[in-house]
Image 1 (spheres, rainbow over the protein chains, first blue to last red):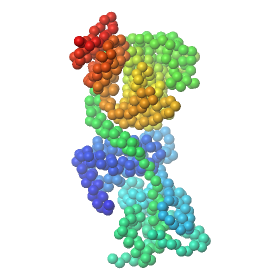
Image 2 (image 1 turned 90 degrees about the vertical axis):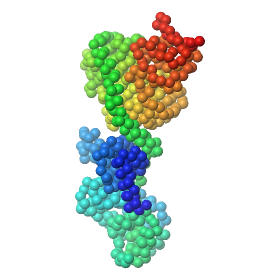
Image 3 (image 1 turned 120 degrees about the vertical axis):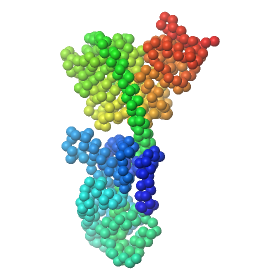
Image 4 (image 1 turned 30 degrees about the vertical axis):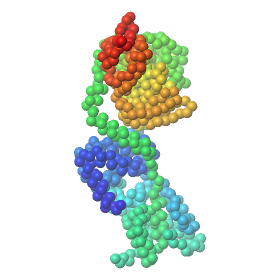
Length: 202
Length: 402
């Protein structure tokens, strides 16, 4: 589905929900509950907490729907709600720990699995990068997740990371430069392997 | 359209269209990138490495099971409908409080007898092993420690702990375990409440969770819960409303079951003399674990009942209110055998009821108001079925009206 159609359709769903449709509310849950759970799980390994937050978000959505406005992107709106709910919990309930040590950070494990046949040197290069990617900071991982996996716009990332536009641009650009440096390093290693031709993958 | 832009690795990774083409490849976008490669605007290496980066950063996402997905939805529905009925619920919750208010003036009999040599030795004692006192009388009995027991002649009692584990019984403050003067009295002993047939007790634990203890039941608990969990041990039936605390699950242990809850309301029925042990969930979420050689865990959604009969486990949909109505003075039955109903009434009123097998096999549906006069309740049956009820020397009998 093209992004535009998708946005239009979700906009409709949200309008129906706002006008009081319980069926639209049920659709919201079935469309977004898993996504919210997956997203929340990137900040904590406490599954019960994430499930409680999913529950809380939908209850608040339902009980507060009279005060809600049209939203641009339901997914981003709900992801924001999840991040708030989690951070709220960590701030409130764990007040006897210093906040820095307990604040949830973004986790993502990078998989070197591409599922494609590939040349030996490319494979070795990817393995090296994949090891290097583990050195990304949580914020760098978070921004890449929004960009590569959720395909969010810079503006949407600003909202989720509570950063201004320029900071998000800088963070993203620096992260990608870091990846290039890693790739270059891995490439230098490759040059010494003496392989020059890469057969074209399909 | 002519486009001569050259893309290197960084350009690719910053390009929305490129990321979209990796994540959702289709004919249009793969043709476009293929022609860019052929025109030399993108090197094959950069293209492949960039595609790999986008894909490699797709880390595996956590997934909920279908049950978890369904349970959360059920909880949301329950919560929403509970909010709708909130006014009604508040009134219901205040009924027991009003009853307790009437009993405030009743006196207490504090006895100082000991009941067992190692009753105070809680260090080595697990909660399930706390012994029943050697003699169980007709009074509600609250055992704070081996040296501090309270007996109440009343029909019902209300026990309330504050956060420090200091108890009030019918609004009269008790000495806490720590303040007990006798040297051999360990302050961290478990407390217990024993309710005989025909009586009833409500209580508030140190964490604010509430418990309604039905007739012929016993509960063992620490005056103050530990930092990692809140465990109590139950024989008989109790309805609980748990104060939410994500850090400390509330665990109700019975002989055969373990029910784990976060913040929820549920009923546990575990009478030794009843075939079925049941857990009914009103709201929230609980996990029920069977004990024994083959432990088994079940997660329960609101308005579902878990039952254990011998080794047989089952979950079915019920109207949870029907199972907790006893705390407000009614029993609600749906196509239930009269023998089961009468057994519960015997326990509730603390009396003996005789009946013929044909009477016991009759089935009833409806609501029983547990009035103060049991004869009045039993006569209710004769309005619904050809049954006669008689009382002679405190023994009630039901027989078919020929």
